[in-house]
Picture 1: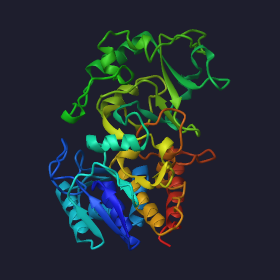
Picture 2 (picture 1 turned 135 degrees about the vertical axis):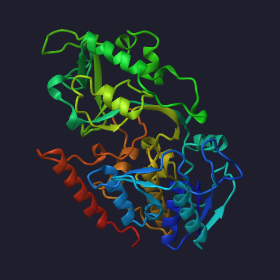
Picture 3 (picture 1 turned 30 degrees about the vertical axis):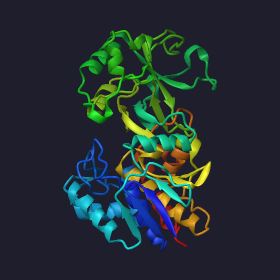
Picture 4 (picture 1 turned 60 degrees about the horizontal axis):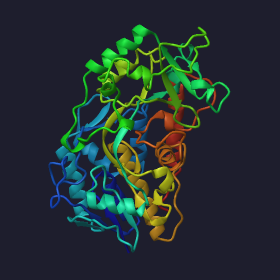
Length: 435
């Protein structure tokens, strides 16, 4: 008995590692070094191609909770990070080479893993398969996945707007309403941040002159109209946004009885209304710039950003439509998807989905039912996001407190987050998928 894993990045090696915990063989494919990518520089497994940071290690941070859950599930990535750790304050950062070398050696020495250095262009029709090929999936395999998922295309370029923690929005400076009262709720579906003329033009200047992320070679593309960065729109004219995503037409501020000069709309991102999306504000501003600039907008002075905006190359499937919570393909349950291709963002999140796939693919091979990860956990919350259709279009997401189940009752942010962490660790502690 053997399970095929395509891709030996973070998700792939985690999946293979979990498979061996069930006493099952894993055939792990990695196309490098025979087929290089534009981002990788070595042939090592689980190479970190961007930052060397695995984000916060604090249990007061959603990413810290996720890493602790993964550690309790025997994560190879967390094991390697402990060996390769470098000083980084409250963050967990690693020496890239030591990190990748450790994972490569552990994988190569695992007697139940057959590592094959060759490109896969077709998904096997027989047996159980995990696809964990990441954002730089080859064109041939992209075409294969597109055919398998009956999708006209995969999403190659993200146009992502920032997402804000609902608890950090100053509601006294915003008002509810939909343009021309076209909303499902009586009060309107959007939170509106009104801008005066001076505030609007200051925002334009900040967007035009702010420091932006450089486009890497493998990310270059012409922008489609629907994913135009706001700063590119600004360059077309200083009033472009006022007649585009910031148009105030059809909105009246009930506090003044007037239509504002411009309006930024915030749209709820989930049914529990714990997260709000800055509508139409995809941007290439650097993260510190986004925080500084967008906090000048009325109502967002103390906003906490759960996800920053970006426009970059990515490859991911429409997971809420295609996948179950065990990350198997609804139309072909013997095929599982793991990693960034599922619509999670970040090293740790990608690795976590690899753990889930490894567990559920193994259980399927043994004739067992899937082992649902508790919803109260960070892993369960990620799975909920990528497998349940939301109110707005599906886009990649990092783990954040807005994804966890809503905490009832009035309490401060710190107390709420401690309660979330406590419930998450209690739940993962009681979770035993290996039985």
